[in-house]
Image 1 (spheres, helix red, strand yellow):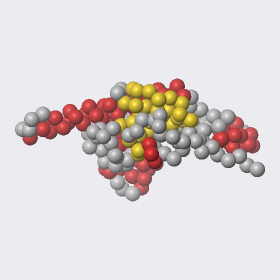
Image 2 (spheres, helix red, strand yellow; image 1 turned 135 degrees about the vertical axis):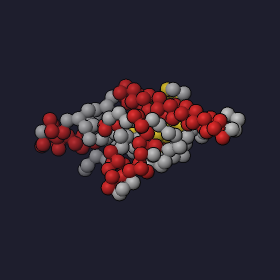
Image 3 (tube, helix red, strand yellow; image 1 turned 180 degrees about the vertical axis):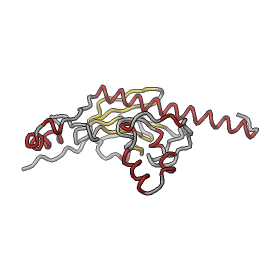
Length: 199
């Protein structure tokens, strides 16, 4: 009889960074994820990763290909909507593998209880991309073990993200979320002054 995947995520840490609630979890499949929780009033509240962002970031904000949503960029190139992509929330965020979640926590179905979790709009990333590896003792790690043994472990070796690494990457995301709020407010104030409104 084959092993059934677990149905519940393990909440590994809840903390604050740059004024935002942050959560690090181990997904039921075994990989880790990091989330920053935004509240109503933030420019990205209610926006999904590929929605247009009201924030204008400098053009030189792109750091590395590893940090962007490669699938969204490929989709944009194939379907001739690069301009839509470059103005999206996903294009403005630099985090491991790109922004892979942007929705209320209530849409994440692998928590037994939401009582201890910060409510709001969760924006996050996962560590289940090319070059990432599942922890050996996780569901997917055990499932992949025979395949690794058959193909040779070296061919399937990747990086197993530890909790502390996910915390660090989540704090990098929180810094960008805070910067988006600051820029949005500054740009709104500049627009109001240009129109002659009170700031």
